[in-house]
Amino acid sequence: MYETKIGGIELINEASDLIKSGEVVAFPTETVYGLGANALDKNAVKKIFIAKNRPSDNPLIVHVANIEQAKRFAYVNKDAKNLFDKFSPGPLTIVLPKKSIVPAEVTGDIQTVGIRIPDNKIALELIRISDCPLAAPSANTSKKVSPTTAQHVLDDMNGKIPLILDGGECKVGIESTVLSLAEEIPTILRPGGITIEMLTEVLPRVKNHTGEIKVAQAPGMKYKHYAPTVEECIMFDDISNGTKYYDNVISKGKKAIMVVTTDTISKIGKRNFADVGNSGEDVAHNVFRVLRECEKKYDCILIQKLPSTGIYASVMNRLTKSTSDKTV
Image (cartoon, rainbow, N blue to C red):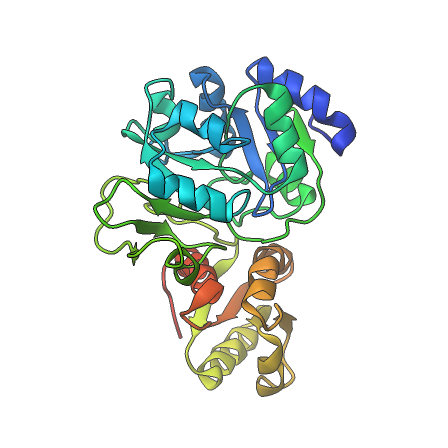
């Protein structure tokens, strides 16, 4: 057990020393908080899986400071360079054939690695002064809701890691888009802040991953993720069906809440609700924070179904994972 310390940029040198000594620290990115260790130290990487209780075949993303550093760990082709130039630093992870320097513990023992340049000054400075790439999944207990504040990390990781760097609330709010260039056609393995519409501005063809998942090529593919600790989130096509389910839960003496966009509030009557905003960017920014707040107060969370385009589709990917696609 650790006595977990939490603080801001003033602790970055201490965080770097911990990384260099083979420890794990949490740090902010623009997407969600990451749980980072030296990606070249397999024993340090193993501590990430222990802290999260994460399956060892669920690969990690390697965070680097620039494209030159990316080239040390993966074979960066022309398409990857164009994507890095267009979208990085930012919420895009590119899956590429890995170089032998990257341990199997990082990739789930497959021959590709996800590389990303985070758009966060604290994250980039931590990579720079630690002088190593950071392997980092989200800084939460496996399967639970991802953290977008340092307090969220502390709620899950207190005593499991030595230090949390507090950089405030994450700007984007959901994990990065994961795009594989190791396929014949570039394939989105996990949607995120960089949408398929944006990617097709750089690449002639992009597709979404479909079909059965036997080997996880990226985080968030194979296992249940992002789930609150209370009754699984329920998405609904028809508001009246959602309100009926809500009323049924209340009739049993339980507490329920409806997570909805701003323009839906008037349609649900006098029922408990959490407003996640209207734009796709607002919903993405707010959704994990709202889920974490609701799981502390309610027995059941009902979530409005969102559009299937743009960043809304990325949020729906997370909600489908969290609910196992349960609907009413």
